[in-house]
Length: 516
Image (cartoon, rainbow, N blue to C red; front, side, top):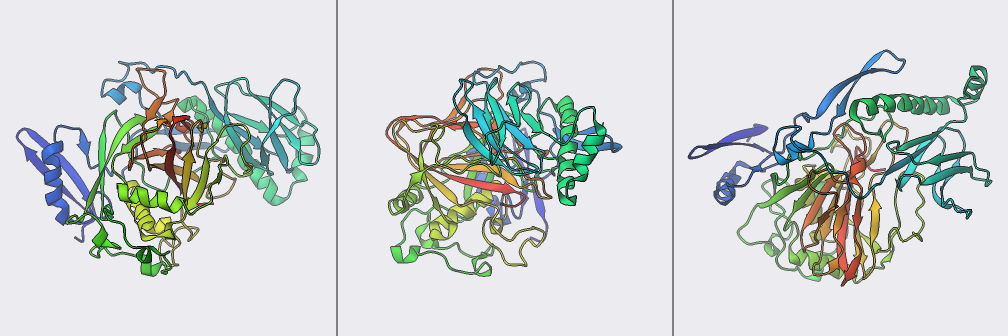
């Protein structure tokens, strides 16, 4: 038990299977081996791997470049050939162009002024405000080819820059300081900046130059600030369609509902909330009997973006408990989100027509168990999903949770959330924090419509969107970042309109490296 991991080989006639079990990962303790053997007795025919592999992603390739500071190197993510998604030789298949033609639009303010970003309807009418761009920061939105945008100062309607979305370009810069063919004026503009402003300007200028090299090497736009570090959290691999991963948790299902007195808000200190491996879980008597470990199977449904389905992540009792909580909460009209400076106003464009509220982890022991189970699924210490004391993960720049509060969302007949990205554009700082992954949790089923859609997934069979059907207790995991730290434009997704009935779900957003 002092070893970090133990490798087990199972033999079945002519098949050998190597499984790596980590103390915090696939199996918490070695006594789970009997469960492992029984699990494989019926799942042997499926391509199932205990693949909590913390090794370097093989699709990361060394990129050498020079943007005026001498030769530099960067590990860039090269998207695998679509043929490998079908376990075939590279080049044997060709990706089908998606019917949905869209892309991320990132707008960078390289000036010391506060600006407003507008979408231009291009019909003579006033534009719609998208975001407020603070000095030397970026913001953006999902957009389409030929769409137009413009910047104005905060105190006037004078247009200082216009942009027309022209694929494959996603990133658009406003730089009034660099005056073409006039180095003297450019120098005077830069000399007028404070030391902090100049530092931010130079980061953005270097990012702009790097992005050109990155696009040449990967064929992808760079939607971050250079250099952004690789994700600090674990990322499940998605090598081929139908690939199975599995993780285990001691946070087994609640199958009976505790009394109201036992479901009071949690007020324990961070240190008191730590559960040792051999300790029973909270309210264990209401969980599945004679079961110490819950297996969670992740099925790959897309590799670009990385999307996984997890059946039976929640029990019906847990789903009903969350819905019961909602009856005592005020659900307000959902807002659209984005990067720093993004407006938080109620959406009046029918982009998002649902209603939502927030369910804190400390609400009840059942909600807390869902967070802990989610932590085991995504292979992140549960302590990172709540406030911590000074001695826990002292390497982190913040002791706050890296996860947002659970968002509970309700869609009625006709409501939807059109295609969007969950990530925002990182600020110019050391952390460049941004949303890293999304875990969707379905709380009901039986509605018509309401699927979760990934309209730009890479595949060789159809231009139609990948859709996931809501089912009670099912979870969907997808990543908003790539293994090299760039934002994943293909993670764009939608909640399709509910045409009959209603839809309830929860969102858990986890940030990297910290929340904020």
